[in-house]
Image (cartoon, rainbow, N blue to C red; front, side, top):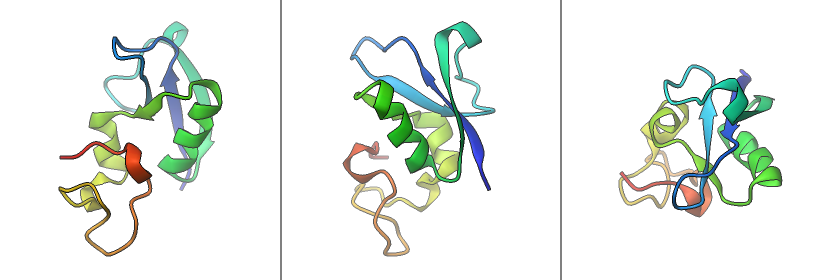
Length: 93
């Protein structure tokens, strides 16, 4: 099922632009975000955001609702044996 995604237009202090899923409580106001449209996967939304901002990364909070319930605590992959959809960009919990 496709979800709507956004990326922050303005970077954080560390220069990163955050990608959010629609419904995230941290999605910035309309004038501070770029609508990435609907994507079937979070990875697709992240790749799209990186066309605009090379330093885009997933939101720590709403990303958990996307895929991170399956990510191992060492960040190397998912507990089901599949590689992580985020590659090396995922946060380690």
